[in-house]
Amino acid sequence: MKNIKSFICALGVAGVTFTFTGCNNEYDDVAPGSYVETERIETFPGDKVMVSGTVSNGSPISSVSLVCEEWGINHVYDRTSYNDNVFVYEYTLEVPDDATFNQTLTITAKCKNGKSTVREIPISYLPDTSAPVATPAFNTQIGVEMDVTSNKGVWNIDFVASDDRGLKSVSVSIPSLSYNETIELSGLNASVKKTIDFTSPNTYPCTITIEDVSGNVSVSNMDVVAMYPETEDPIQDYSGMYVVDANEDPDDYINGYYRYMDRKGEYQYEGKFYAATDDSKVYFTPERNLEGDLYGVSPNVSSKLMNNNGYVLPVTIEKAGYYGIFIDLQAHTYSIWPLVVPEGAYNGDLYLSGTGFTFTDWTTTKMTKVSDYRYKIETSLNSSSASDYQYCFTDSYWSTVFRADADSKWWFSAASGTCAVFEPDGYTGEVIVTFDSAYPWGTIKKKNQ
Image 1 (cartoon, rainbow, N blue to C red):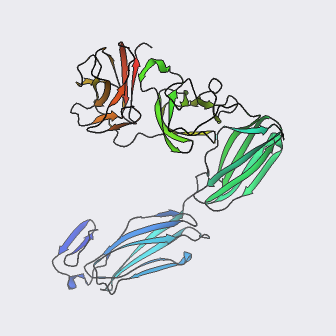
Image 2: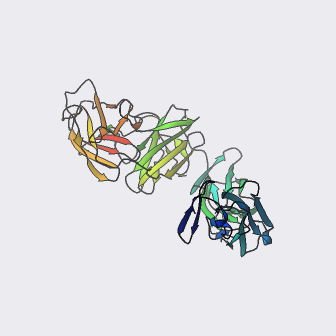
Image 3: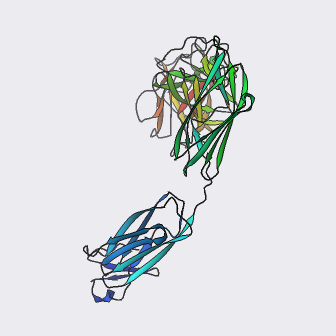
């Protein structure tokens, strides 16, 4: 329905709008128009529902009431002293915890001409189909270190259970320990902390079940591996870390093999990675080499991150795609989650430019689009280049340009600024240059390596 200002009165009836130049007696027999944004309310006990609507007429609005007697709701907007022809309202309907269904919300709009319009909004129960969740999510393997003196290992369970309607309980079951405990929960969020002792090294299957008040359950199965301490090289709070593809050889890359991870806190780092295939594998290193400190996972516990070059195994990413990665070196943990391509990510034609290639410095050569947001081109490096080797990526007009800092740690889109600098170390052969515009990252790899 159209908004009606005090000097123009318009009434929408049956899809037709009537416009009048004055607000006189012609509205004495006209009921107010009453628009409600929702025609039906689906809700549940304890919920809060926003009810929005607009009332309008040539005759000023006197009142708007919202009534559901069964739920004790009787809210009235008294507009008699305002003399307005349009009234917009937003009412928060609070569903009682002991609410019964099905009910009706009656909305009555009245004008000063004595006419009224009644709208009835059915209220029905919205079934609960969402299972509760645990934060952080459980790993499929959990390591517990045994104390060699006391011959005891301690597992400190610590997570937050959440549900949109309400929590009921959490159960922890470890059959081989004859351990089975149920803890009652309440509210929408609950902190769960529990300590369980292990007195001998072994692998203990465990099931943690969270149930909500509607009977929905989430079940997490994991193996708790109790073992004696593993040897780990000293760890440091590095200024940054790199994530690397364990299936690739860094010697095959001239630039882009080491993907930088930002330091997020003490011993904590976060970065992004594109897994080109299922079951991709990654390591973490503080330097652009794999000879020193190297972080992977224990051969015994796939969730335990540790530093021991030659002993640790790479972390496996099961499905191809874009991922965010967070690691905590001190807590020996990591988390990996899928990323959605950002809205508006560049997906048009793309060109390579730079210095040190066989094409003329800073001219452009078109790349092949191998899939959405991913590009490649085969070219060669030239032994005689400018003062240094650089590269960037652009559209045909240099209006969208992807650049990097000189150390090629961060790629970004900017009209001007630095470009990635690389050192071919005497290599002058053919190369494959790739770029990903979803989460900008460029690489230069020796061809046929």
